Image (cartoon, rainbow, N blue to C red):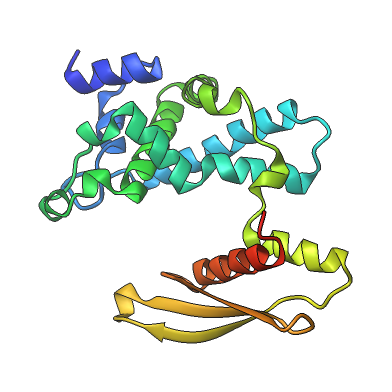
Length: 226
């Protein structure tokens, strides 16, 4: 058994019957040979199903919106990357020369994609039940105590609910400025509560991120103790 197979057995509790699936799961598209894009697609679907089942059973009183927020918090790239990093996946990634030089083995999107690809590879290698066991093992520390779904609401949602509860008009978001080169733009968005005469500005690498920052700053203005 080679080093990569020993790592998978130790950390995932699984041994591949078809070693080629494991190799493909760890191969980024920047490298030669079969890569993990298709396996990532499959693993993403399997992961969604397993995590949906976990949160559904753990929160019998939660509504669809609450369950969706819980699932989203567990399957987002940032969470997957944290799990992958803790598992030591960066030591086993197969990258092209360019990605290696640019530190691709530490890039969140690459680590997250490889982890999902491993889940997809297990599914192909031994079926859904095997993938289910692997995912539950890996996610056990995160699903042991699920957070309150209210804590998972983003800033824009919390701000909207706050002003609606007081009968105020909804916040108005306006794109103020876009700067930087096309592949690395920075967005500046304002958030205004016209009835209150309040205005905040947020910045981010996407319009959505800028809106979230502006909303978070507005929440701080409305409730400094938030």
